Image 1 (tube, rainbow, N blue to C red):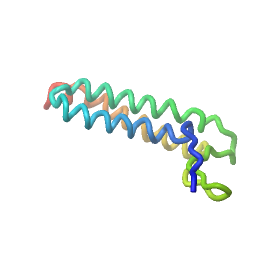
Image 2 (tube, rainbow, N blue to C red):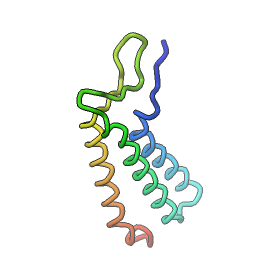
Image 3 (cartoon, one colour):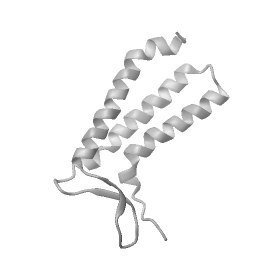
Image 4 (cartoon, rainbow, N blue to C red):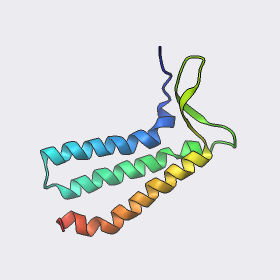
Length: 108
C-alpha cells in the first residue's frame, strides 16, 4: 500500500508542526533562549499562513488532496473554506504571540 503525498496541500499543517518540534528541541538545547523560541514560532505561523494561499485561490468545489490511497479515498482534503479557516486560526495565534511577545521575551 502506498500513499500519494501532496506536500503543498499538507504544508499549512506541517510548517507550524515542524516549528513546534524545532522549539521543543531548542528548549532542550538552550532553555534560556526565549527570543529564539518566539522567532521560530513566528516563522512557523507566518509560513503556515502563507502556505494556505494555494488553497484559498482554488475555485469552489476544487480541493487539494493529500495522502491518497491508490484508487481510493484521500485522507486529507482542503478546499477554499478549509484553507480560510486554517488561515484564520494561524493569524489568530500570531496575534496572540505578538501581543504577549514583550512578556514572554523577558520571562515573566
